[in-house]
Amino acid sequence: MAVGYVAGLSKDISRFLGIILALSFSSVIYLIADLDSINKGFLKVSQQPIMELHQKFQHS
Image (cartoon, rainbow, N blue to C red):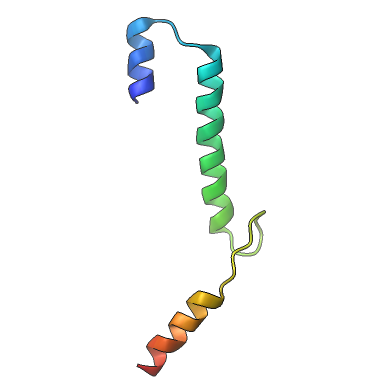
């Protein structure tokens, strides 16, 4: 929001800055979506720690 506000005031924004900002937001959104899908994404996270925690709660 701050970058948009400053760009609106100055009426001059660098195309390079706009491209970098768009790519960074896109990569964060992609990373969140990829980690949200358990076995379908590019990054695969082991489910073993959460399974061990679940077993500890069941035995308590």
